[in-house]
Image (cartoon, rainbow, N blue to C red):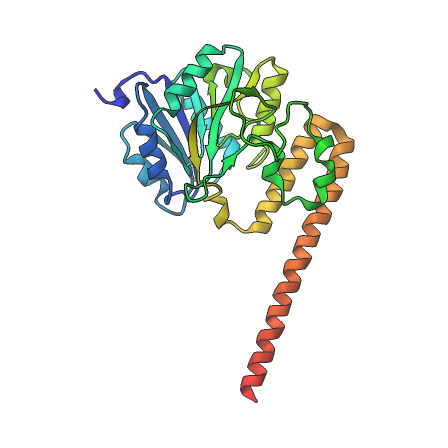
Length: 301
């Protein structure tokens, strides 16, 4: 009997977009989980590479091919709605699980029925061994002009400061990354799945906010770990476009949870930030073009 023949305890939900370099290693680690029946659902957002084909090579994996890129939140909802397991793991395709990651985290959730979602220790590439502490704003560091607004923007009191070392015991946190988020499927369904107004960013901020509001706890459990290579798909995309997507999702989050005033303040700050970035990049391009013209002129002379 194969893993695919068993009723799964855990459904691993993965969204791919040009993730051919990493998805096979990720799914291999899913297939190595000990003592637990696991299925994987991969939703491919119209990748231009062989992401879907690589995923289809794994017998425990179901692949949903989207004809166009519907972005992260809608694709995750496709996977979550197709999931058969009591528990779900929302997982990035550039992650690698330890063999005990899934059974250990499922046991943690079973032991804590009031916990809606949990994450284990996330480490960076093996080359640097860095630990990603579940701190919500550290991932948004490039919003230079919004730095002074960070303490005001967040809604809770249970932040893990960016400078804090990775905790050694289970703690409550405001938000966990959905690069590796464990939850009960019924819990995510009860709060209305992912909000599909978000396309790429602030998805975990929104879903954890709603979990807390519904009476669930969100926890960081340093009982096992996952390696996260980090941003392997978005690294290939134009930076200014990603910045624009982040601004849009930030404004969606601000408008929903902080009202029109916060939305307006952040909109102005974000537009200034985007204009500054565009101006700097435009100046660099113009400087390069002028230098090339001078070089051509000198060569002709």
